[in-house]
Length: 156
Image 1 (cartoon, one colour):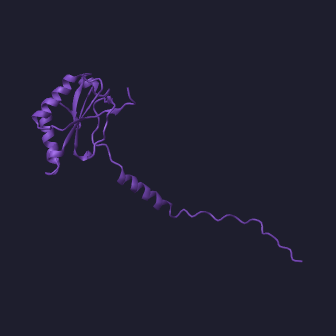
Image 2 (cartoon, helix red, strand yellow):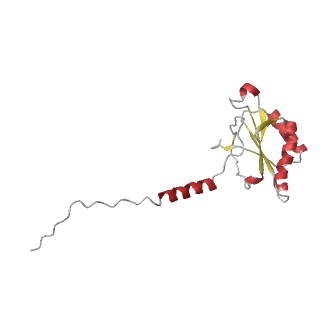
Image 3 (tube, rainbow, N blue to C red):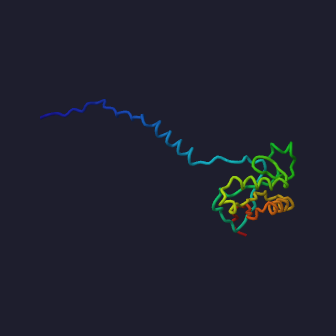
């Protein structure tokens, strides 16, 4: 009778890692293309007020943001703790909002200029006086589409 002998010492062949760098670069390229970088560095502290009826903006490319709130801790030594208006990456006064709106309109196409919306992102503890000043300047600049940023609350 024939005896079948097993050869001991067979090893599992190693896994080929030749295509691993290609896969890693494809994933890296995907994340670089699909993510957006923050456009504006926040110089104010912003905690959104809560609201029950919240809607998402449809075309965020047509939205210009005005931030209102107290300066960040790093900026408080220079600017104090009273609420400030931030347009793009710097503190501005309410009188400069007209120039800001004009420059934001110039960035848009001619057809989209009438659809431009101004979003006010004000801290929940900001007094209404500074918000009213901003709204008055927006009226003077003929920016009549205004939205307010808010966080959705769970109810009453």
